[in-house]
Amino acid sequence: MAEKIATRHAYGEALSEVGKNPKIVALDADVSTCTMSCMFGEKYPDRFYNVGIAEANMVGMAAGLSTLGLIPFVHSFAMFSAGRTYDQIRNIIAYPHLNVKVVGTHAGLTVGEDGATHQCLEDIGLMRVIPNMVVICPCDGNETREAVRAIAEYNGPCYLRLGRMAVDVVTDIPGYHFEIGKAQMMKDGMDATIIATGMMVQVALKAAADLANENINVRVLDMHTIKPIDKDAIIKAAEETGAIVTAEEHNVLCGLGSAVSEVLSETLPVPVLKVGTQDTFGKSGNAEALIQRFGLTKESIADKVKKAIALKK
Amino acid sequence: MTADIVVINQERVFVMNAERIKELQIIAQDLRITGLKMVQYAHSGHIGGAFSLSEIMAVLYFEKMNIRTDDPKWEDRDRLVLSKGHATVALYPTLATRGFFPVEDLRTFRNIDGNLSGHAEMKYVPGVDMSTGSLGQGLSTAVGMALGAKQLGKNFTTYAIVGDGELAEGQIWEACMYAGAHGLDNLIVIVDYNKVQLDGTVKEILDTGNLEDKFSSFGFHVISIDGHNVEEISGAIDEAKATKGKPAVIIANTIKGKGISFMEGKSQWHGKTPNEEEFKAAFEELYQRKKELEG
Image 1 (cartoon, rainbow over the protein chains, first blue to last red):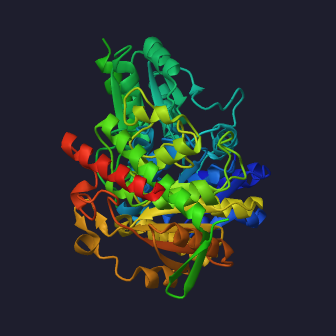
Image 2: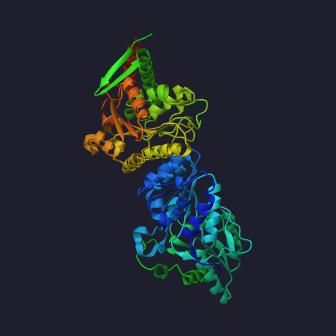
Image 3: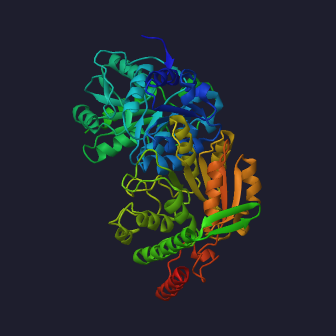
């Protein structure tokens, strides 16, 4: 297995790489050495704007820049790039369908010690309820690079959710292919399906390995694109495995679990159990300790898989 | 050959051809008449903060802005962001009269089957450079356009019209801080300083204090004018365009509901629709003034 890398670090490299397109400009609100947009800034200083701690203005400026044919990537922590600027993103980026990429790093609990004010557990919900938005949450460094290339090519508003913590690379597998809106099958199985996003894909794979020791064979889908959600893969999983568990570093309300339930409740209702934070704020602490405390573990997932299987008709 | 008119405002002297002044005054009055018809068709719309802008719109779109009505997305055009996006009753008649789309389309304003939504809409309305409506946001987009012009080496000017009530939005000052700090001299902000907002006077709701000092301290070149005087508007835009190294703001002293005596300066006419009698009285007044101008 390759070395661990935080998705935000892989992002910094990937943005510098796609930055060879002279239309790409980057804006940051005084956290560029954390979001890693600084890497783009070092390579292309004349196309990098540090706007100061003014996220609303940053998003507005990006909207204006995009009307000139430029492709702005705006950066801050998810709490501020997606949370603070919901109105700006909705009204002056998504509504006119402008080609702006909003990047939220340090998403979820694993920001760690900075605590609840910085642990955005609602951004997937906030962004996916906006019409026209594409919402992507890659699980590892490799997938992040693929996602950056894809959103740079895609003409329209996107939200990219990234984490602070270094995570294992799991998508360096044969047959891996990234496409916006297409789930990646990480492991096949017929007893149940775990649909995971972001760093919970790695946790899901560990849960799947443990379950295999108990002769429970689960499918694992890496749902890197929350919107547009891959309905076909979800319905197929429901048809073929009959039980679903979702896993996300996000509130179980309005996130991946909700998106999956929305699809199945109108097509093929099967049990959908959700691993995520249970409608609560985070707290300060070591990232690993928080993962345990809030139940974002392989044990929680395995437990829910067994419950979901028991609920099958 | 008609004589030039000279207007002196504080230290400034504005000179403009008398015939052109009259033409622009008549255009402005026509924009009011067309705007009021639009509100009558729609049975809704913001009159007060649109009629304070009529002369400003006339001077911008019929005198100053470098635009092509047959190519609304022309990349070298001057841009205008109506940050106070509810003033579509000023913007849409201006764009239609200027030739961006048929004047008859104004009948579909705010109608479910039309594209002329209540607040400014860039996606479907030719000539609109930015969708606005959520107050405080438009100015940031204008800053982005001005910055982008510098990035791409383009010489167009970006105008942003903000309301005085809108100045309470913090994002306005984020945008001003950026524009001032980075010397965006291709940005011209126009404050529609009509001193009245939805709930009452600006002084009552949230006093702006000294606007000249505020903008000046944010790094702007400040020009205060009578926003209903076309020669002052024209001269102020020339001065703003000639300003190098810093953005300019034109503080346009205006009257909310200008041109309809019973609406002037009254907050209740921010977004209220007149009744039949009020429409009649309003049209009479507007046509009467137009006749005087044409006199």
